[in-house]
Length: 536
Image (cartoon, rainbow, N blue to C red):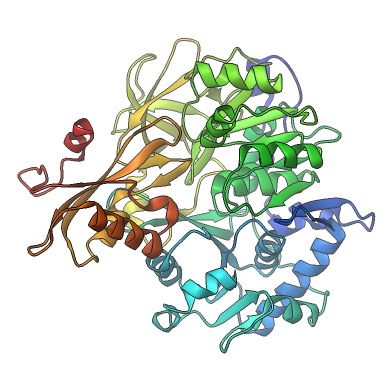
């Protein structure tokens, strides 16, 4: 969509959105490259290093087969299909199958525990789920509380009662399937995002969301794609930053994607993976870059063309380290689940300013406004907002019209983040309007953790905040008031931490637990989290 140039102003001036009336992501990301040539789509690397290559032709055939499975099992257009998987072949395959059938896919972090999983499946009314043995261990404990969940497709050798084996079921189905004729505005995916109050919200996105991501992906990856490009990210493919900054844009452009299910990020293993598979384009969250710097990674076989990062500011020191280690600039981007990749960097278009998020993506009108939707002068602090309409913006919050309404002011979508824009057009992130915690690239809402903590028999009250962390940006800290009969101590703290790990997710447990007699509150009973943050 972008024409290569070194003139940012010209790039924005000449840009025009090209959003067709009819558009389906399965056709765009798979079928148009499935021409019988065996063009490579995915390189999946097992834990033992064995790699498996899947062509667009194979991906098209397999996703048509699974679309037939979904329809044969009674699902219809508009039904929701959940994907509770890590990076794997099955994940894009199942997404594409849902898109083909006009259904709505729901990516779910493999790290989620029972409570987090149950809420999202119940709220979405998911009719089917694709998962593996590890996911089934969590799912089976809550399935009887999910009456709408009719079909469970299990990746692996076993198929307990009430489940179907994913691959044998797929292979028995026909590869003939007529992809549903969808409008660009038709629903395609629900991605749940955490907030500070209430339950997580499901951002309902249309098929056009992919096209909305392309200008930023192309700009940040230095006019992606180019001959020889191969894309990889260690980020979980359930995150919008991996799905729509990496996986689907690469497939759209016919660029191979490397997938690998790592139990834990290993900086040296990451370098070896990039060298082994000639990776040229990466999305590396700031935490990954910090861990690589700590490990002092070097590998002569790593030849990157572009590095994209986002989630939090990198700072001058990390930018310098990336330049010295990889010989190229890291380009930061900014966005959120509801309206992603609105701002970004490209050193060939304009100089990188450490700490800045960059400039507005071509096709995006980004402004600093007040809470009434009034634009503020350059240099003044306000809410970062994106003028609407824009193809990347969600349709709505699923089953939450009140939250949807609050997300907009006049012509603008409100990001909820505070920032400013300098005289040269660079945007600078200042703080969050809410209390979302950014930890290791994840945005975590404190209320979901606090709700989980209250289920522990020892906890009377709790408040969760983010505290500075040199690697993760923020670590999660829980302030806890105990019930009578319980005494504070290290053993109880560890027990509470483990409780959250199991119930929610490994990345959502409080790394620090502070017992207290009382929490600071307003006159109306709201916890003053800002006071807790100042207390460390």
